Structures are given as C-alpha cells and as structure tokens.
Amino acid sequence: MCLIILSYKVHDRYPLILAANRDEFYERPSAPVSLWDDAVGVIAGKDLQRGGTWLGIKKTGSLAMLTNYREPTPLGRNAPSRGWLVRDFLMGDDDPESYIETITAKKDQYKGFSMIIGDMNHLFYFSNRGEMCKLSPGLYGLSNRLLDTPWPKTERGKKAMESLLTSKDDPLPEEIFEILKDRSKPDDSELTDTGVGLEWERILSSIFITSPIYGTRSSSVIMIDRKNHCMFIERVFNAHPEPWVEAKFDFRLHDN
Image (cartoon, rainbow, N blue to C red):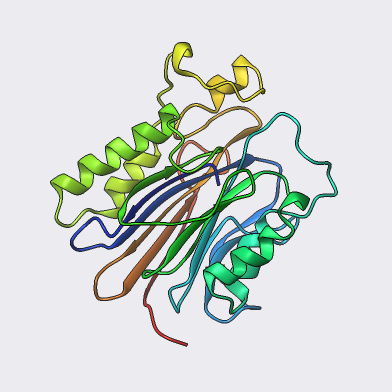
C-alpha cells in the first residue's frame, strides 16, 4: 500500500478505524480481498505475481499492513517480496514483538518498507529504514516514508479523518472512502524529493493516484467497534474511474 490513515483508540465507538489506498502498476496481477483457502481465518487481498499481500486481518483480530519506502536505489529484482512479511505474520502464530525480532535479523534483504502489525490491544510499527515502536492511542499517517512523515497527502488525510471523527459519533464507511478518493495535488513547493523526478513526485502526491500506467488500485476501510465487531470493505479500481469490484466482510473477532 501507499497510504494508511489509522485511528487507534481515539473514537468512542470505534477503537480502530483504518483507511488505506493500495497504489501499484496496473499490469501487476492481484486478487481482491477474500477469505483465504490456505490459511484459517485470514482475510486479505493477494499479489498474484509473488504471493504476498499488502493488508489483511485474521478473525482472531491480528492485523498487518505494509507500505513501500520510496528510495532511488533499491535492491535488485531478486530481493524477497515485502508482501511476504504481511502474509507470514497473518499465517503464523508469533506475537508482534517476536515477529519483528525475526524480521529485524534479515531486514537488509528487503527493499525499504514500513509496516504496522498487532491487534486491538497491542499495535507495533517497524521499518527497515527506521525503528520499532509500540503505538499509543492516536491518529497516524503512513505513506512511502516513515510513520507520520509529514508529506502533504499524509497530513491532508489525517486532517480529514480527524475532522470526520470529531464531528460524527457514528462515522459511515462511505465518509471514510470519500477521504480516500481525494485526487487534489499540492503545490510544487510542497512536494517531497525522493529521487523519482518532478513529474512523478506530482503524480504520487495525491491521496488517490491516477496515471496511464500506475495508480490507486484499491481502497480499503476497516472499522472495529467496542463490541469487537469488524467490518472490512475493499473497493477495487484497477485504472477505472469508479470501483468495479467491492468486497465486504462483517464478522466478530474471536479468540483462537
């Protein structure tokens, strides 16, 4: 994914609200979010090219999400897929801290990434271009850098989410999807310089990205209320101006 806005233990009714856009080249094959056949209770999309995923949750409440770290000199094509990091956590039984310890030992094998993993009680952030930290209650933004790096799109998304959550006791998924649809771009003076050139910095600067070959492939909303009811909705665009596939899962989190 390329943008995550996360409200964690902020809203009275929904301790966890996640809004996320996955940006990718249109030609890369992927499957919409589904209940996986080869992993008990895992609900996630799937990268059909390398078998990983970018965002998922287990019916037990474990969840994981990952963004790429944008840098001009990544590793070669033979580096392991970053999507395996999310997949392996969801398919395994490790607690978040133990899992992060495991991947820390091999972090240099991967191209740059940031990830958030855990459950409703314990969420952790880790990047192989930064450090690990346990998340306190708060509103977080993550794009293709480190947690809460103040890129314009990240700050815009956080501000919109904060406005929605402070004005609504019962925010609707549709209102969160509206945040993820924002195609506005900042002025050039506000753009970051990540080594991809001005034209691509402009393209990548909006919350919802469009271009002839690359863009926002899907938008996802996860909402978990205080009674452990979870709603997971994904809308798939794949270069279409409007979503052409929608998947929705409603379930109650439960112990193993």
